Image (cartoon, rainbow, N blue to C red; front, top):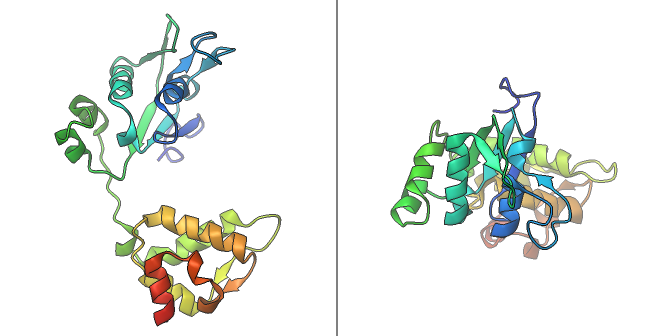
Length: 216
């Protein structure tokens, strides 16, 4: 979306909203001034300032606390941001893309996600089907991640037809992240190899995939 937009030449700043505690997440998003908290030895702009005229991608936005949801809503509504410990507001022009594996409508009903923020970010919703419903994508994704994860000049791993067929039949409950993690594991374990069903130790496979390995 970013690369094919008029913002393509500007910064693209992704952030995993569940990877950091609230205090660090607030600083990453909005920045902080020197001395704002212990360890803030210098002023630092947040992602919204850095991504001015570009895109901020908030992954797993549903994991954000209610306090940060409230502050994010204010930034999106008023189009300016104030650093932690600061008094000056900086105007921003940023496209926000938010993603989550949860149903935000259910999260709103359960009181875990602000309703006003949900309607603010739900301008153009895009739903992707789970990987189990698009098995034709599996081979393409395996090749993509194998090439991306090849290390030190070693050829990327590849997959024998029978093993590839098994992977295409697997339901991938963890979707693309699970597939990428498996390719990473195989690239470390069997670098540069054309991998067959019998080469992968059962303990290195998810339980359901290990059961399929025995069947195959």
